[in-house]
Image (tube, rainbow, N blue to C red; front, side):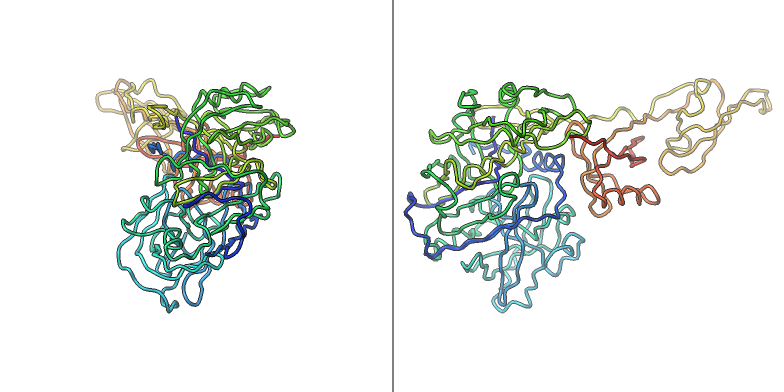
Length: 565
């Protein structure tokens, strides 16, 4: 089983070197502040889809400082900060991601809609830019990706300037268009760079002695406790005002991702007997646990139950709870408030919310509560216990991801999400059994019967059935004649409701009740499509009905989702 500690890191220090204590001076340190973004529209189901795809079966065992203020895309779903590139500087909003290693953003040569929605880098306007020439492609676990060419230029992070290889996207997935970030700033190891031989920003900064200490510390404040304000990435140092207690060193168990050993998970100090490997990932909102661990945690919460469609649900009143869940690493327990579990309204008026800790995963509150910091040289992650300004979001958004997590040997796991398999395209039926408002195949098209009549018009006096029908998808009128005893093809027609998550380049991003994502259905033309888009732009929660028949599918109707607590 794997626990993915995607956390709204309260204080994560990713470090490459020797132990650091609270007396370490903050000189030659650069910080990137984080700022809350009030414009973002949160969606639990969207995060579940992203989570499932980001780790679709990954096997894991898995002399200065710079401060980068970061924006909290509410509620604690994503954080980004400003990075300057080139001479003169071109400024980008980048998502700092410990789960990847590339630094990339769109180029002015990218004409995709997603690129045009963001700041694009113009190499011709930078006197320090050099063209690397090598092609570059990156694909993320959530199914998104980008491609282009590599270049080299000065990258400035909170005052630390390093000559760095960067990816200039000439094409990128439409899903990036909905993100406030222009691109990504990878903080993982060089072993997971998309192009072999490229050094990471951290490796280059350390080699050039640009950092006072070979560390990056992270403070990601939650909406619940700090309104998402005051967050930062601190390169080259640790801000002791952001935590209390001593740093805890947690060895990295496998280079690539920041992977650590989770020795135990507890509830109010009582062990739940869960031990696993975990990945500290600032670029992912959710956290994954196995079915048994999720059941153990929820068994301690009064009123929690596993809904067949929504997954684990908890009472809205849980927001006032003083209980906590703990994660033990390097013999130190780090606490997360159970109040953060009452995260997303179910939407059925039941007074319940989806639990951030589902049978499948949790959100990013762990690191928000217990600040991490990375030490690349020593391959250690340092965690601060009980930070002063921390956030408990790890369990807070542990949203449910429908599907089955199959534990295997040690920390390896396979995550299998099985979506419904469509039945056969058609089945035979005697014409005399057809009825008005039923369905039939006419001229190779799935149709709904609007009128049928029997006549004695053939020269031999045989009866004929005249069928008049409309195409299920186009609405076009079709008709044909059959004998009453003839076998005709009847289309298998299915209709499923999906929650609308996003609209990207005229495609609907959808999520089924069982957690299965769907993003291959186009926004319909005409009045129906206009109404769906208007409802989405008004930030209404919409349920879209997708009709499927004979290998085709389309959005055929919609309604507003019921409101929850």
